[in-house]
Length: 188
View 1 (tube, one colour):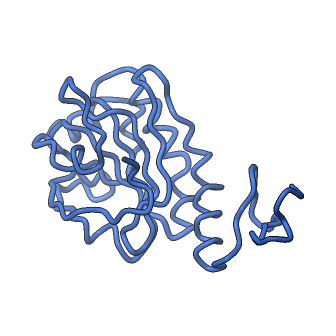
View 2: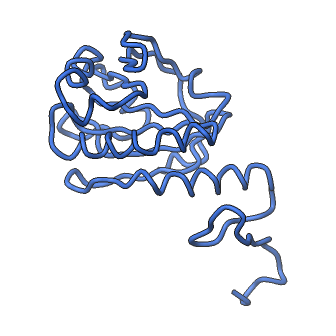
């Protein structure tokens, strides 16, 4: 069952906040009131994961300019996130919060927990009401491209402000949208 269109569930977790070098508590309430990207990944000190998180960091300023906050999540603890941040060249660049999910509560809520007890590669776009608007789940060996999040979030924000319109394939900001109706049936 897809989580698209579903409201996120309550959770409380510990995270490492690299921008303040502190451990912080993150809850589902932190994902409300603005757009959020929640990026799950299998494990710290691994291989594909640091390339993905570094790529996400490279998009972080653009995402923040879209009133979007970013959170990464794995089943490692917040302590391991700090150690990874302190010892990895790629991860040391990260400034968004890194949530620990050793209890698997968040990974299970987002239906992203693998049989091996690790989070799968999943990215979720959540609107200010806490509703999942888009998601992507990849096999373990397939890294993601964070730049695609920019257009997806812009489209989701446009649709939120313009009910009744839809964004066609490859839609870019200021691009043409469609208004579904009888006059379009069989004409596209």
